[in-house]
Length: 325
Image 1 (cartoon, rainbow, N blue to C red):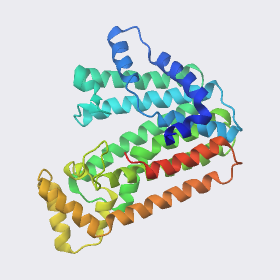
Image 2 (image 1 turned 180 degrees about the vertical axis):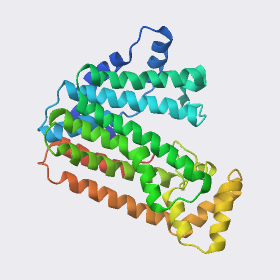
Image 3 (image 1 turned 45 degrees about the horizontal axis):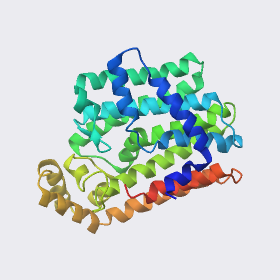
Image 4 (image 1 turned 120 degrees about the vertical axis):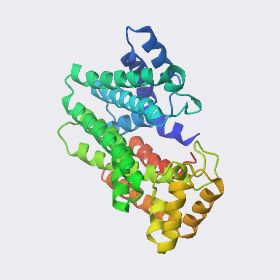
C-alpha cells in the first residue's frame, strides 16, 4: 500500500464525505465559474491539508469529528486552492501538477477573479455558521502567507537573506497553512482546550521540514515535479545556499552572488553553484535542520494516547521528510 493511502486509511470515510461537501462549497450561479471550479476539482493533488484537519481532530477527540471539522477542512482547501490559482498568475506559470493552470486556459484576469471568489467562499463558509474561532485561524494564515511572499520578494532583490530571515519566510509562506490545518482540526472538536495551540505548533514544525525538503530537491537529479536548479534560476535563497554563503571566503561569496544574480540562465554556471553548495556541506546542514524540526514535531505527539490517527500523523511527519517529490 502506498504511504499516502496508509495515512488516509483511518479517515477514508471522512475524506469521501468531505469530497462531496467541498464540491458543493464551490458552486456558483455563474456558468463560467462552475466550469473553472469543476476543472480545478478534477485535478486535485494528494489533499494533504484536509487530511491534517481530520487526523488532528480525531486524535485529540478520541476518534470524533463534527460538522465544524468538515467546514474547517473545506475552508482550508478553498483558501489553499485560491492561493495556488493566484500563485500561478504571480509566477506566470502555465502548468500546475502536469495540467494547464487556470491562467493558461482562461487568462490572468479571470484567474485572479476566480482566486478571489474561492477566498471569499472560504471566509463566508465560516461566517455563515458562526465559526468565528475557525475564521480567525484562517484569516491569520492568509495574512501571513501574503507577508511571507512579499518578504521573500523584497529579500530576493538584494540576496541578503540570513538563516533567521529564511526561517521567517518559510514559516509564513509554507508552514503557516499546515499549522492552520492542524489547529483547525483540534479547535473544531475541542475549542476550549490547549490542543489548538499544541497542534498549531505541530503543523508549523512539519511545514518547516516540508519546505526544507523542497529546497533540497533543487540539488538532486531525482525525477520530481521541479527541474534541478530552478530555485537558483529564480534567484530564490534556500537553506543549502544560505549555509554555503555563510561558510565560504569573500571571493567565493562574490562569485556565487554574481552567478545567482547575473548568470542564473547559464546552465553550466548553475551547475557550478550546485556543486559548490554540495561541497560546502549545504545539503548536509539542511538535512540536519529538517531532522530537528521532525523530532520536535514528533515530541508534540508523544503526549497523546496511541491511536490509528496518531499513527497516521507520525507516518505523515516521516513522509514529509522521505518523499521523493
